[in-house]
Length: 342
Image 1 (cartoon, rainbow, N blue to C red):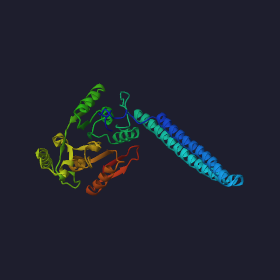
Image 2: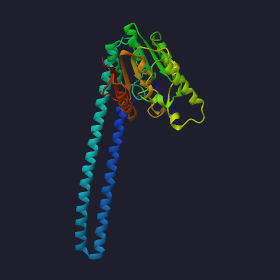
Image 3: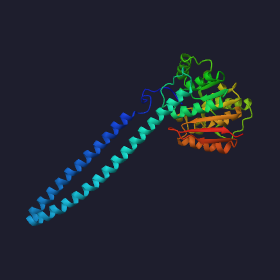
């Protein structure tokens, strides 16, 4: 659900490693195993010859024969153990490769399903790695088709922005607002929307990441309305100007709250930002600050929920917001769906 490409020079190429690359890596590991075991075999032969020579020199031919026999038996036992270990490791690698192949087939299948569900003018940017996986795109498409949300708020723009805007074009109604902290990528996503003829259904808003007061990261924070949001924003800007702010205060960073002032009745909230490495529990403030803006039938689509921070976030949200129920979607990178109980 995140960006089309990672915006750092050191980032890996877009998309997950191909199955051929994984096969080559596995083959290299098998070759390394064989080389290691061949080296052990050679050393074993050297050890047998050395012990035989010593036995002959010290105790005569009969002792040498007994020594060689004993050493050979030990070497054969060690070789057998090595062969078993090699067989186990090769079997594990084969099982891993089968898992990779099965998952790639499943991802390709779900991507095909997604394209069948969306109109023919729709083309997704490359998926996986920093972007959402095909199974996540399929789950998001199924959700949108069943709920047909009128107002969608997305935290973190990317491939999902194009997907959701295409679905709104199919519905002929609705609006998507995508919040993006990176000014370069904000413009990039806007260009992609314009190229696809989707600008009428979606807008991308730049919102820099600013400090928040510690209370804003508490899921149980009681937000009554825009006055409370404005006060939190004021406190956050004060922290930005204060040189004596504490380490904990510096760790609480989130989108500029002024970007959300005119948003209300959110039918679908997509949480895929800020980036994981922004600070500890980077996405925790989302519901604290936006819960009062959700519509009575709102759904929440969470990305990257296989990570520890997101698991902790979901547990905190379940405790703080009893009106919401969260369900694991069991996707490749982890996605969770939240919904308001009737």
